[in-house]
Image (cartoon, rainbow, N blue to C red; front, side, top):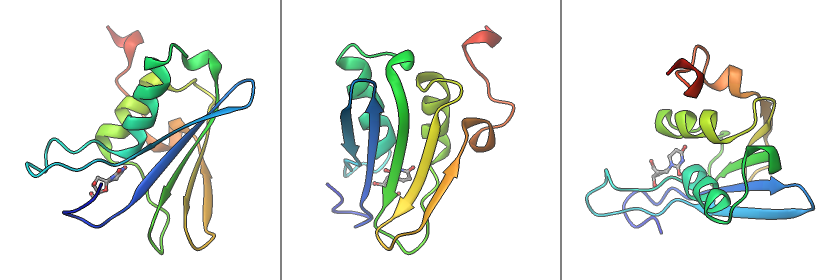
Length: 115
Ligand code: THU
């Protein structure tokens, strides 16, 4: 649901035992209340009772010519909810795919072990 930006993003989280949980960006007229695809997907994973140890990989696909990097807020969410060594694929609809780690996406992250 992207009536304001017209920028479509989809995310998929692969769960052990071959299931896939997906999410999309859902915008809001207030803009700031928009939910990004990555957070939508990961919140659904956790809502269903799965946890980081159940996750194999995550993919983020933007309807764009370049590979979409997750926004800063999503990087923080991903850092907490994905397993440490999770494979993350960034892709688009014209076949470009980049494989990246959480460490590369958010170095020196503030995480649960810092509290
Ligand atoms: N968006 C995402 O869904 N994920 C990101 O990591 C980057 C931004 C969405 C939010 C908004 O609906 C649109 O892309 C433009 O910012």
